[in-house]
Image 1 (cartoon, rainbow, N blue to C red):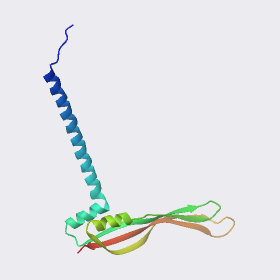
Image 2 (cartoon, one colour):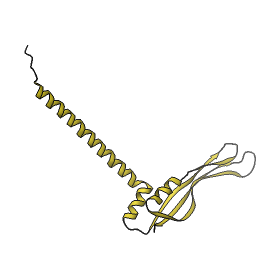
Image 3 (tube, one colour):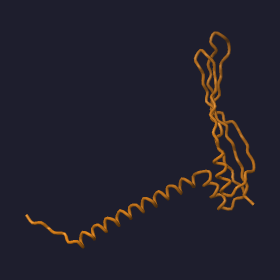
Image 4 (cartoon, rainbow, N blue to C red):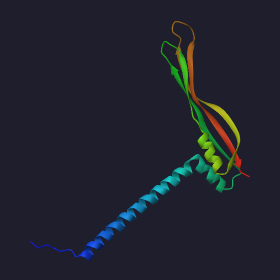
Length: 143
């Protein structure tokens, strides 16, 4: 059985090649992560605002869910709604940071259906509505 002796120069070259390959892999991963972050930002409200500003638009409009309303109907009981509010302050602030001034807010209720049950031992029905409250924000370019 023969033993092959690897000279020091070959071993050093292999180590350098491995280090270079690891560095290249890390750089590629960092570039891919940067690209994913950029794509995610472009899809966000602040990213959309920046793109609108870059296009030279004079106004920017966005609709955001402000409150989610769910129907809860209890058999042989009553009907209720539960409400879950959403704080959009950070979103609005991020749009202002991109160069927009808040101008107008309009809200609307989007009805997504209702649940109903007949009253127990009485005439009529219990009804609970489900849906969401949507705020439409309009911004103008900062002066």
